[in-house]
Image 1: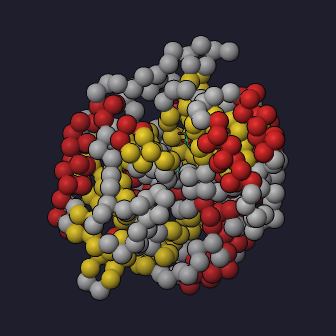
Image 2: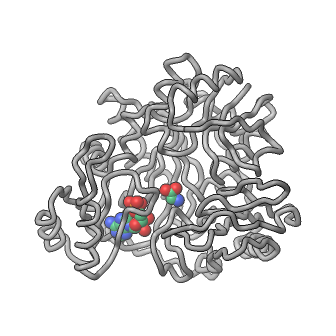
Length: 434
Ligand code: AMP
Ligand code: GLY
């Protein structure tokens, strides 16, 4: 099977890493990819991964049997539609289904229709509506930009002025390319730890992967601004044992069924971002693709060949796929971010030491580029360093030892990824069902 992976981040590098280990895969291409993938995939230039015509032409040119789309932007732009229309199997939803991620207000409508538990919310298009919503839903205030914002469009604060300022900034933007009116979603605050669960679906069947936890804030102790994610670990020993089954039956299956019923079947990863609150499970967000950096730790533990699984989802044959097999190991990833990330990441800083990292640690590239002989940074999240071990403590040690031999000028990373879980300090509120 020949597979083309679209994207260039650490999530796509993790996908390439796993696909390269699948004996069924005899041709692997990444577009545009990154220097870290070059040893396991053929890198193909692609000026614009959101261009449906260009991606389809490339898929034909390399003879792809399957196209796997990593990031959300090509999905929202309709790349999966075009690839499927050309007769090539595609892992990733059509644009209409990817709106589950592309529009938070659409996602809220789908959750309501499918009976999925989520935070109470109000969709607002004026600052007056926002002011009223903040008063009704109360503090801490949660204000979300409606469109795609790479995890950075959300402000959670107990300062009403900060909440209003963020809303005003989102609403005052010129109308987006889609022609939509600028919109924000104001939400009820959800307490309790967050969990990410990726559900593979062919539009009918749902196969959950292992849950992971992501660290969204830039600084240790969950301080600082929201980012795309600064680290992750899996599995979650502290999570309730019935968590995955509950997410599948109460959230993923009703959502997938609803999407099919409305004529926009969802094929790919339904990323369920959850809060385990004192009132039970609540969906924080849906995404339409693998999460970054959670993918790095989930795939580090998946023993089932990935190519066959994604192909089964893309061709509507997931029900016949054998049960997934998992390593009993734990995995931790630490993101090394550029100076200035997330506000204004600097590019072009030299990266050294990557070659000195050895198994059971490995380095997935995110924002890297080759400048002559020198590897340099080219994005906000530069590297995602993965450590694997028999328990969380060992996996953390392996990951951080590898981080410490790498240098990226001016970079920063969190030192406390998975620390609370290692120390048994993740607090799960006792569910009080409403
Ligand atoms: P989102 O883009 O919707 O995933 O939001 C990004 C992050 O903001 C989440 O991972 C949470 O950490 C936080 N967040 C979003 N919505 C809420 C909420 N209703 N209550 C508390 N925190 C939230
Ligand atoms: N790690 C968060 C995301 O992928 O959206």
